[in-house]
Image 1 (cartoon, helix red, strand yellow):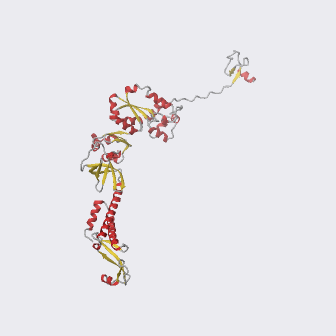
Image 2: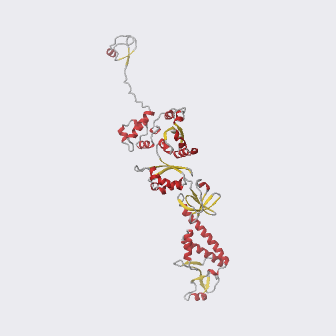
Length: 475
């Protein structure tokens, strides 16, 4: 067939991302379709490619016979001898077919089928490639906008960034380079539909992975992230390495790492804070950049808390239109109310009273004692976990242990013991069990019948002298 076929195949491989084997198969199907259009069958059609891929040939396999009944499938011995002197009746010959012999309609029909096949192959290939990249970062170039949606050139195909997935801060121009997250990949009747996003928290997480090696290699973990796209993002981070400051590593020296991410987000504010198992500390951290003086837990069951700040910190803690405290609520999964010290003092019922009442009474109003360590207000989850691992669940179990025994538990420090003891002294009345009194036998006074004991010398009722040992003997 035509030379230069190899270059054409390579061009399709590079431009459309289709494998060479699939392209050759498509060419085969193209030739078979044209052959069938002309001869009515493909039963005896054969397509071969040269080893270097430069040429392709189409043949008709025909059986040598004395008398030809079917010109498509058979060839006479006389005609076959002209092609090959060594052939005999019953042999099969490959007769070369020149595609130029096909009529225009046959070729056109075959071309249409080949194009559709290539489109289907390309769609399947791209789908497999991009489906595996869902949740990953990709870089493309702004092409056009339609109905608020942005179309982005991804090289082999095009992606769509819907308006709802665009940050309100960002404005794009023709050929702008855009980083975005592959949110979802779907097959549609019009082709491949790749949805891109710059508003999801996973997008910011990927930016941190790029800029902070410790996040990428999971030395630092992102516990949770919440975001109001274009305005503010809060993320809580932690690490199991004592020699690494997770917040400092994410911010970088002189803020260089965080500033790179902020620039990518067109100035969106980012608060990186330390995750803490203690809800009090976690809430304090979550309200950054505000400086929180104190946090009081109002209701553990309902996850309700009160944060107290200086007057100068109130607007910072709440944020513009309540954004800062709203994001903090979502981050810690608590309902946080922010008050100044003066507002706190004016509250009808003090938070301390509420906290004590909550510790003493269960939610349904029935009186109940605090019996387990996990019920104690202010006990860190870390400490509870260490104790439970050693089968210390009840407060009674803990009280019956010596300080040395408690300190021998892995993970428990002297400061932990002091913290537990302080909470116990505040919320639990430890009553020592009284020793049962020794049984003392009683007798009646022989004079007045008053109840007397063996240690009495005279009756306290009538004053008669007693000789207890004699009375006992007489009885």
